[in-house]
Length: 427
Image (cartoon, rainbow, N blue to C red; front, top):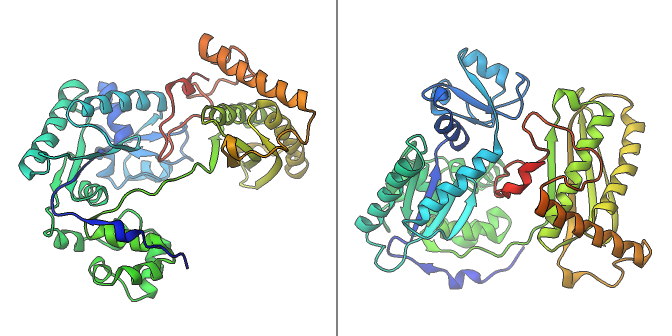
């Protein structure tokens, strides 16, 4: 089992230290703010306009019918015949994200952007007083209403650490403001189910239940060492300390994968059109790889057909970051895939670069599989393509054709913890 004494540095906190804000039904709220005809109506944000897809967000008017993220649209329309399906516009959501977070910065510095619609802000000396912290929260709400729009609302939590402050945002939605005072919040936590807490999924709940822990109150009363044993890692111990209000610093993380996926528009589901989409997804992944200054040793391709047949493969090479190595690997793997699935139409394509390395970690066999001059030229050409596309616009120079999709761009979407750059939506 993983050993760790890092908890010795955890500090008990006796005052409010964190403000956490969570934008309510973000994608749907942006659409209602941006398009007045959608206001006060049940809407579902969808990746494509078909009843076979699922909602990726829902307005509060739609939630009142039981529609939520993941609800199949054909089921959602049974629940709410007047449901309006709105094609996702990730570029618009990123634009609003920057405007909203700039407004928040007018009232308090943002310490950590947690996702497209969440951020944590540390309260500094003089701001820990509940009245002052609450006033900052109210100023944020008023600023959003005045400078962004009345349909952009957020729930704000105030607590001793960011975990508890985030938990507080879930206690009152929409437009909530909840303070969890130090040493006086247990009863509010105990009203939650285990899986209501961020960090406890079905697998961890199962482990807790097997250990005889079926409520947050029971978990609260075990020891941190016991929590680590149940979890099977030091993460359980860290969770225990967070729950008890300690200041638990974030652990440093290292990027492990860079990928893109797309559910294909109906007109792009043939083998040939799907290949063009896969090629653009692969190049986007390479551009991001270079922007992070990383190298990759592995490339994976996964597909799913309209008949729900799945296929995947992986290829390894010396650490690289150029478009051409990945494009060649895609071509080989695509041919292998065709021999397996025949002419079946494709529904979804996913690509992934992984086994990532920092430049200082790349060994001397960097160009072992290709002549050194060819590898150097590939890297240089890829960087030149980046520079030209950044200066003159995306797709000024590209490998292969770039099909026009219903959303207007290929591959770029908002992941749970990554906010895309605005430039990514131009192709």
